[in-house]
Length: 458
Image (cartoon, rainbow, N blue to C red; front, side, top):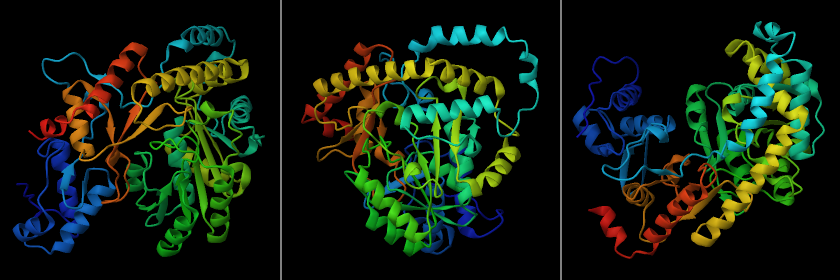
């Protein structure tokens, strides 16, 4: 039974409890999966009100440290990267289907060529100077070409900045459209990095209901009105984790709400290159003065380039440049120069075609083996709602015991008590399709075994 020492911690009691949670989880005193005391029990033992503990747990959950479900309790989340989580003793190596990456092998020859070309340049030493915060004209040209290739949008390079990957673009965009203490509207299941970023920027996350086409416009308008929110982060195409994409009518309806409510939108389109045949018009194309559009080359080329692009409304450019200068001075010129070479030479477009073929093959394999999982056929992951009586934590634990790792829905949940019993299964990262097939068959077999649920509870 966890009992923190908060007597010497400064500030309000709820912050002291949240800080103790942070420290004890970081030190391993509270391991991943540990069940925390109930609000009432911890309040009685610490001599504080139940409301104080409730606020403390809410703050820790906002930071992504803990999670839970009404009626089952509150648990410590596993904060370690997937590759460092323990493997079952005495078993074969884990088949990791938790990392949303795409097999990198198709780009190796092109990478060698680009590196040789870069090494032969006469101005190589100039790349080692402090980079311009806007990037060079060539870098912005590459970003505009990339966005045009993957969305059909024609981009003004004066509104474009190269970034250190999608994470950096996301940070800059959120910091540009919010102030500490603001509410940020997000899909009720959202990319997990939005939670630590919101904590860093001191934002309150407000979940918005979704259906089979993503964000529900009426729910978005109600949430904005109820919380006084004027910023939205969303992933309209190939949503992570649910795989849904907003149709044309839904996208227009969402932007109509944003105009009426004065909402600025951060649009995350990192998977968009996989679905260029769908005629998708990004939100940024519908209202370029209201949308900050971000994309990245991590999924399409390779994560190590650490290159992304952020397209901003003109009035926000000065603020975004100031934020970039204050945090990075500028983007690593070697990485963005390599990225520009890939894009402007046509190698990036070629890699996208290879990735789309890879995902289509993996999706076909998944549909043969695991018929229960739903997914857009262009998506690099599956979304698997679990049949009763499975619970996401139990199913994930049972799978890990059989040598397969997936991600439970609570990793993506923004609010307590609104989390479906489902898991995300990533199908693109395994180099060998036979290994992926083996992992999918383990999942299918577990779903088919009527006694497996009881086994998971032993």
